[in-house]
Image 1 (cartoon, rainbow, N blue to C red):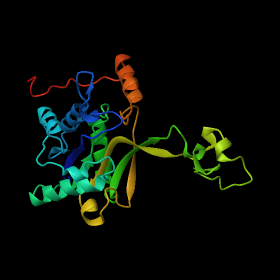
Image 2 (cartoon, rainbow, N blue to C red):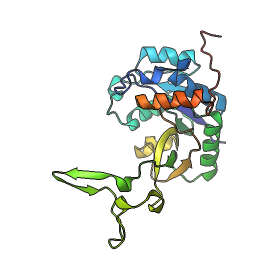
Image 3 (cartoon, rainbow, N blue to C red):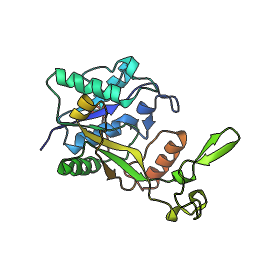
Image 4 (cartoon, one colour):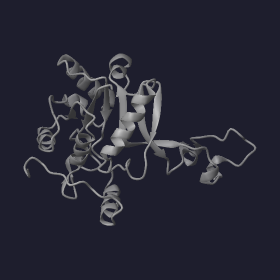
Amino acid sequence: MPTITALIPARAGSKRIPGKNVKRFREHPLIGYTIDAALRSEIFEDVIVSTESEEYRSIALEYGASVPFARPSEMAGDRSPDIEWVRHALETLQAKGALTDAFAILRPTNPFRSPETICRAWEQFAQDGKADSLRAVELCAQHPAKMWRIEGSRMSPVMQNPDQQGVPWHSSQYPSLPTVYVQNASLEIAWSRVPLEQGSIAGTAIMPFVSQGFEGFDLNRQGDWIVAEHLVQSGQICLPELKSRREV
């Protein structure tokens, strides 16, 4: 079986929700749920948090992750592309002789991703063998056929119906529109050679991982936290019992 490392990105400069990655969700910092799921999946050689923040580093260590290097601050801006910090992580591991065959990106804004989710995705990716990467997706809620570009005093649809004689997609019911998926925060997996050799975290042969239920739920805006709290309080989601090293 190929080897794989978990990479959890946790920069400290979130603007929509300050301190989002370590903001407490129920009893624990948000990042703790991702670290816990990664560790309990038992598929990773290491579970590494990439951060420029000493505070985040301390919290990550409390919940059992490794933080063997600091992310350079120039790779931690709100416009910094993922390829920068991923290559930094992989090249650092390569220099230490600790580079694995593959890596998974597990974003800390998803508290509902389970160890079973991670294992299912890894099994599908490893069995495929020919894909450069795997990315979690779900059916889009807001269809791009009903989205518009504004240019001056006019606008045009983002997706054009190729059948000009039919009903325009922007005026059609959702079930009649082409099936479109949107990526979510569940996970991404790729071979380590892809960023190192192709300069891309995804490559060109990308396989879908269609997430189920709430396992792709992402807490990025204040309204997401309200929905997430309701899901837990109503019993639709059961959170694991986490313990930091301070509690052990």
